[in-house]
Structures are given as structure tokens and as C-alpha cells.
Image 1 (cartoon, one colour):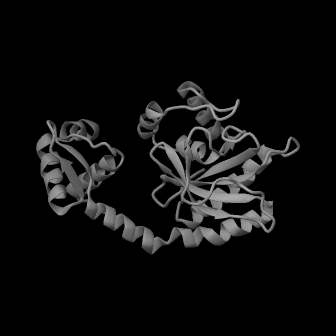
Image 2 (cartoon, rainbow, N blue to C red):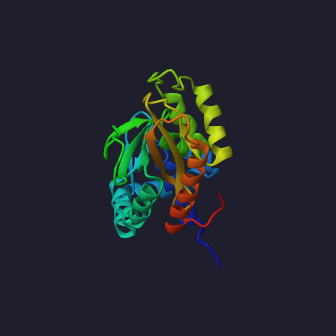
Image 3 (spheres, rainbow, N blue to C red):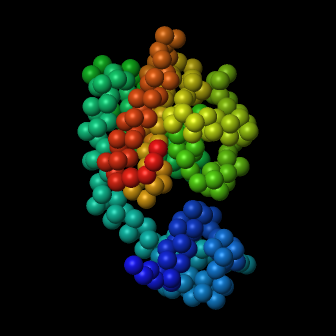
Length: 253
């Protein structure tokens, strides 16, 4: 199968720009993609004209994702209806473990709770749908960040303002990086009473069809010294693998 070189370069440029919320210059695009400036300029100019990317005309023009690309993404999400796909699985999982289950996504350096599923007699949790919490002290955040591409991950970590919520909260970039390595080794993350003293959570990443991490699931409950949180983390990982397969991910875990 013969692939069109310009089309491939266009997709590469869009993917690169989508990872740069603060924008990227033409020189940076050429450097990152090893692309001649004339070729990159022609593609970028066309993308600006069609609304796929937006240009901020500063001293050096910076490019960000445009409204047309956003609308296409929204249509894709609406057509996929991935929430409808994962909802019955997570509802059943919540009943199975008898604990509250969340699905969340990253929003810059925070986690946003998109869905919440509770068993028949739920333990009260402070997190509600639509609220945000820091990445560095949540199992959702750790699970997502551990599998985020390195450049994006480092950009977020370098902008983090660590705040101590409990005696167990991670408060340095170095400690957080070590924690993410541990998450990748295990396949799941722990919030070991790092956000709230009385709550312990486990989380695992969920991957989309393109292989990128699209969010994570977590299981939350009141802390119990007798609870095997590593076993619970393994359960969360198994369920996250099931969800990723449902969403079309065919890669390895």
C-alpha cells in the first residue's frame, strides 16, 4: 500500500501541535519532525486556512490546535460514545468490589472525574463528577502520567506546584518521577492516603484505539489496615485492560 507523504506529514504536524497547548513555532516543528522548512510552511499555511490549526501572530508565530480540529474530535467522541461503552462494565465492577469506582481524564496538571459508580451501600467520597484534584496525589493521575509520552509528561511535571495534603503526599518532582516508574512496573497506581488521610485508592490506565492513554479508572474506599491494596490494584488493572480492549486498543500491556 502506497501512502501519501504529504498526508503523513500533515498528520504528524497535527499530532505534534495537539501536544503543545502553549503553541509551537514553525522552526520547532521542522526540528522535531526533521522536515524541510518550505514543506512544513506549505502544510501549516493550509492547516491555518482550513481552521485545523490556529496561529498566534506574536514576535514568532505560534501554532495551536484550531476550532475545526476540535469539532472533528467532538464528532468522533460523540460517534464513539465511549462513556456508554464503559459505563455498564464499571457499574458491574463497582458492585463486584463493593467500592466506589471512578473514570477520570487529565486536564493539564489536574484530574477531572468524568464518571462515578457506586455500590448499593457506598462509602461517602468527597470527589464528585466534574471536580478536579491534583495529578501527583491521586491514583488516577499517577496511572495516566506514567503512560503519557515523555515530553508531555516532563512538561507537566516541571510546571507542577506540589502541595502537601497529608504526611504521605509526594512533594518533589524527583519522588514523583520515581513513583511513576513504580506504576509502570506494577501496571497500577496507589493513592496511599496522599490526598485525604482516611481514603486509599488504586488506579489503572485505559488506552484508546490509537494506543495513547485516554484516562484511568480508580477504586476508592476508606482506609483499612487489613485491605490488600496491591490485590485491589491488580483487579483495577485487569478491568482497565478489559475497557481498553472494548475501546479498540490492540496493543500490549
